[in-house]
Length: 342
Image (cartoon, rainbow, N blue to C red; front, top):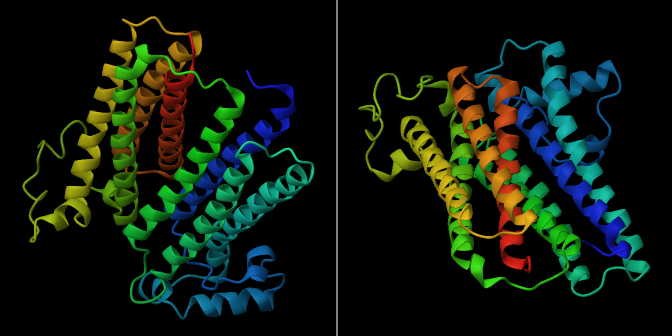
């Protein structure tokens, strides 16, 4: 386990992971309530201070009226309804700024006290830059819905989500290095680690397709399981030309791939669990593999329920968080298999 001097740094890093998980949940709610385009300017002041009186609310609402979402979708919206969608986007941005302070202030304190040693300072700088990049990508995403369309690009949504997941994963990996400072590799787990890394790659692809499903509202169609309205491969799945557009821009094709990659993720983790049973593993390694199986099964069930109920907000957010938890669990299993020494 970690040495005592690193305990406060570990708590700080893991707190960052929790805050990012909360950010992912708030972002999911913002998306599912169609609130993400309610703030049409990137303004540091607006990001911290909401409209404070009726005049300011009316001014913000008038700004919103100049953009496609109001003109094409919400043209009957009243000010009270605008306040409701404004809340979630405002909270999303405010939470991001709060996270920046939560990371930056302790970072400066630890740095001044000489606590960030052995490459940790460089890693913390990477985290700082990564946090700023996630925010910048978020605004880049919003811009795609403020021009000619009343919705954000699903490509940019996927980039934004993966940036947040990658940042959380990197912070978690750095924290694991402090929690378990021993770096001795146990060669007997190398074959199993290869399966874990392969599962990690497929999970990343699945998360990207989850973002595509969200961005295209593809979860609103084919709300049956295990078939897609009675067929395993509906006729419309690959109906677009050129063919590649079915894989990344067609609702039917994107949902089809998201469903079937999910089966592959479950299968791979099942194989990992089965192979691990035949190995002599340390307790942390065994717990990591067991947690992996439990989390992937729960995530699969959540995905099915989310689909069957046409993506209600609560289930949609839980499913998105489940993807993050599964990613971190895979990283934990990989770390323990790679570094735990017998």
